Length: 186
Image (tube, rainbow, N blue to C red; front, side):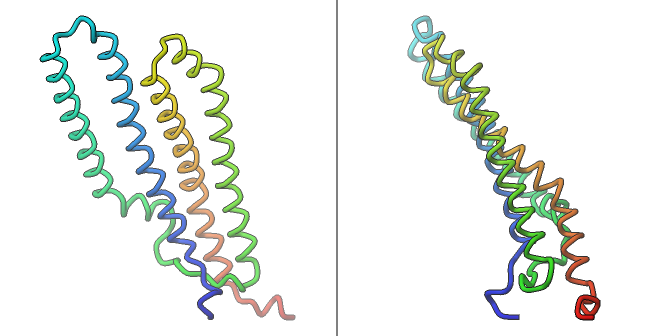
């Protein structure tokens, strides 16, 4: 099998699941920070500057602890997550084999379409709910919250499709790879 005929389908599914998980972790941290900034920003005229600095330092420590905890969970469970998304043992497939290319293309289109759907859903929610909410308070932190929520939601939808179809795609491709092509030659 020539090098250009090989396609790492397992790596594609596993790395996509890992990438969306990282996006979810970062977006949750950004959402928490932006909501905290919104509420602290409302108290700025009342709070003593020394206490404000203390609050910002404590907020930074809490954010780093949450980030480290999320990274610990990610490191601990990343192999399990990736193996649950796509079965181990199937990595490179021959794209010249009958039926492999259409299956890979259909699953790729499905993941891309789910990404576009997620972006459009977020756009509608931002346009009709979150955007006007942020404008009513004239708050940049609420706008940041809206974008982080959108990133989380889009990554969640894509991750759901990847996890949902990854196992079935793996089984289907394994069935195609393991099938005897002699029946097609007769």
